[in-house]
Length: 202
Length: 317
Image 1 (cartoon, one colour):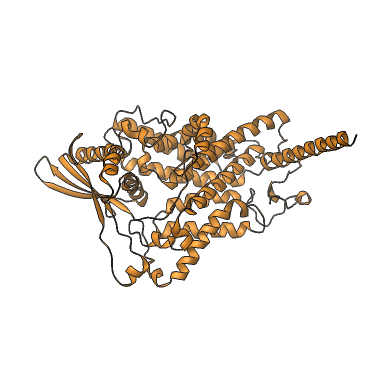
Image 2 (cartoon, rainbow over the protein chains, first blue to last red):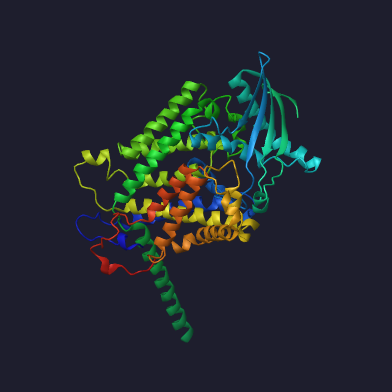
């Protein structure tokens, strides 16, 4: 209880709620607090099965007011940044190139961050090129629907015929590399070529 | 006899224990508060939400259109259908999505100026939820933090002070319980956020090693101010990383005592302004700072002593 929130017992303070109202409000508050605390407990991984079981009856409320957040900001480790490079063949036979996000044109900064989230969230689904073939094949089912949507959006926006997408993981130099002026290569993972909604290759 | 006496005493002690808990609970949640602080939070949250809606408008086709960055058919892959509803799902044309975003924008502006405040807050919440549920590929921490404050702004009397509504209202606003619940919900939600954010970091080696901050500094995708000179000051990187980690993990405990609260809030200003300025996430930084303002005195007068200060016990303060 903060000092400032102690009861102000004068005529300018509204009377305290009756017991029945306080009991009802207490139950509602407890439900809300559980709806706040359970989603980050239940995910992202690692998370317990128990938390997920308890979360089940709260899913309608959590979804209705958008409380399903993990709050894992820059956790467990701040990793490298990502972008998606695209190359497009237009209906007129021209070649267009671009990147998502584009620091030059995506302004204001909030727009840049909203677009920056696209490669960041897809990168979480795409295994690195050196991962075993089986894992990469399996992961394709997770990320490819998103890649198709991105391709379709770009093709619609630029009246393109075909677009090729690449996920770029920007090399994150450590302090020693930076001091010595060294830097590794960015890691590029092909996300496929797409013609409208039909994928033509991977 | 002795056993009976013992059990009777124990029962009485249990009752006292529950009574003490109930008293503490009702004091925490139901003691009336001055609505001035909530009015300030309403202005700031409404303004940030209006800005967010304006930015959604800048790429309507991409965020909410039929051929958007993420089609409606794939939204379920990132959220929990059917509970994550959105009024953008049935919108089939650009005109429809734009109109809905304009409704959200006007509701947020109305919330900010305190005009028909509670209905405006409800529509602003609906618009916010619809946007984040339709475009989960494009949301980040900024959206999470805005969501923390919208439900409380509906519950509390957010339009009682510093609002258009208050100009037309004949009755003077008074301290009330709804405002306390609203501020408490923001406070507890913020503690939950920092707790899980801090615990998530404890899984990462770079936070234990004190090098995590470098990962943010060296990431060119985020960078708006070049701090790579820190490479020559590794101990400073360690101190900043470990300081941030300790602050986040301990926030939920140290924000409540009157002695440590100013230090915790000062650190919040340092961390969130730092993130805003150096990583280009000013909206996220501001939203976090606004949420932290819920821990300021509700009457916003730091030096004023309440008339019943003798009642202040120092517990939970």
